Length: 205
Image (cartoon, rainbow, N blue to C red; front, top):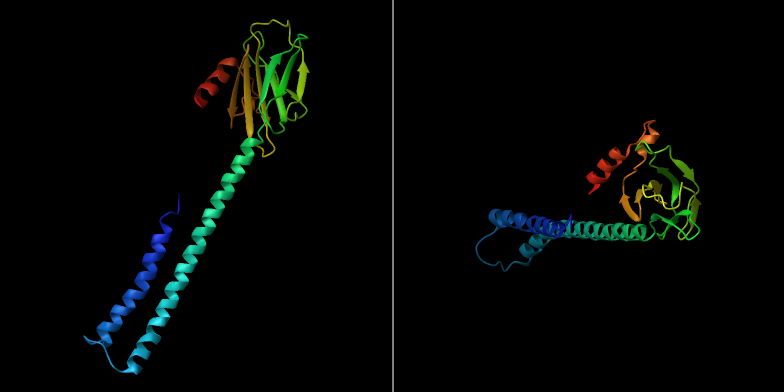
């Protein structure tokens, strides 16, 4: 853990705050042997209490900071787990009515969805925007002949936390890429070739 050393740091600091003034006191006022005078013990106690209070304050501050950090880490981990449980994942398949459909097989809604096909020139057409898909929802569309062998489809979409996810579908194989927008170059006014897309997917691996 990032701050695992902090308890030892604060403990050493508190120990030093008590021991160093104690050494100075003994070297300056002390004698070898124990005094029988209550007044001397009282003065020594008053002197030491100040440093013990400082050390206690440092230990308390360090413990509070350390426990707060642990709690924050647990909260972040919980949020990551919740986000992963609620992610959308879009796949594509040909149904029995010879109609292609994009289905959300994830647990969360997919928003800002765009999809594009590879055309005869090995480039993707300008993406088509569709409505959001909740978990288990389908979007139906037509693409040439039902048994088209060269069918390739790229889908880019977002979850509710604005994390981008992409799916590349070829024949019966779906590949999912988290954190990558396969169609982002269209937003810059550029066309996307199949070669460019394959380079992006190779770099992801």
